[in-house]
Image (tube, rainbow, N blue to C red; front, top):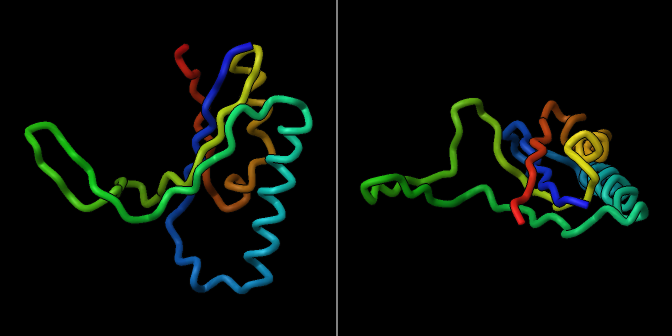
Length: 112
């Protein structure tokens, strides 16, 4: 088996406008989806939710506030999964709640 990272990109939005009920529903979707991968024995590492703020270091020592991308989406978190190949990893990515919110899942092999 190989390992793949699933990177969750989502549109930038203000969570403070989300009701507690909506936040619980979103949490349940993520919990159920990740639980489904875990129940198959495919979950290697759970995602770490990333904060919105940060810094970006570029060549020449230039530091800017960030991370910001041009297309108004952000990298929210990630999972590491075990799969036979990239096609299976892509299948595991189906059903990700980020897709419901107009986001995407980037699937990339992890070098051993």
